[in-house]
Image 1 (cartoon, rainbow over the protein chains, first blue to last red):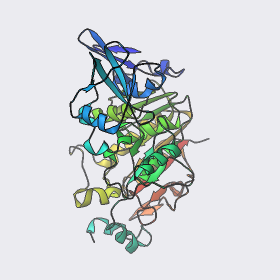
Image 2: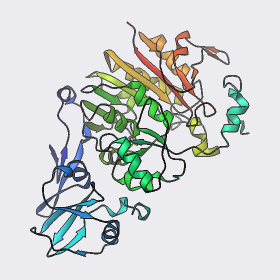
Image 3: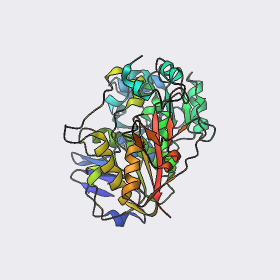
Length: 120
Length: 301
């Protein structure tokens, strides 16, 4: 894990990495976390890659629910979890990214510009 | 037909069929990303949603034609990093390079990241890929592709390819150099004119400098693939010929399942090293994809 300002990047360790340590990176690995105010937020891509190993806070949605979130709506849900990030899953196992669960309502933390209407 | 390709009438076999093929639209081809999904299950999932895929290769189960998909970027599978739109011939570059797991790879002109991400998949996200691109405007797309495709073993650098530091050597180098993009005529149309880079250097000179530097960055048993999407021998065989003259390099035969033509050994008044026959040329009337040139290069044994 590497830190640059308010972001953390994850790169897979490798025996060949040290040989290239003197190169100047513009970016190493995937941006995994970024600081949002006082909180550390996982990125969409790291959740897509590793979210399948989550054991809780996974929210399975149908397409109409995902569309609603994408439109900026908040979905009312009674989840037995604390306020915080939830992993949004569409279909059986496709992990979209994060939502935010606050006081019984879920909002999208997905990168809105990357999701296009025909996808949903 | 456009006069742009008339100079090649003597070197492109069945030239009238070649010209006819340029009128047909380029088929949509996608690569399924094994780092994030399984090709068979994704194919089934897409077909259940009405997206039909046809295998584009007998040897590689990740390459598909999507004849009825005009905008693969509009598929949810694209957002999820399960697919990447990539020309079939372009995908051949990484497959011919065939980087092994735990190796070191340099992609000298990496943006927008299709080949780097393909190498990462072939390497199963192990080892290290240096995805280099000089142009700041192109690096966001490179970073986005690598992230979207779940690539965890890549570092992005911003060196001039022809000046990449010589401090370390690589097991594999991919030199997919800037070129005149004639092979992309069906995508770009008549606007794909020969491009000079700032008037300071012609394309063949730049390509030669990149290729020489790439070769000098190879380990003793390393392998380099030189790739362009142009038909112009001045950017293809002539560049590799100059490498063979200036370095102790050799060309290796390339085995692909598709109908390809060998590299040229002469064009106009120029004669090239006979080993250039081991390079391969893809033409759209032979393989319905972007025109391409590949040469597999290593140090002479």
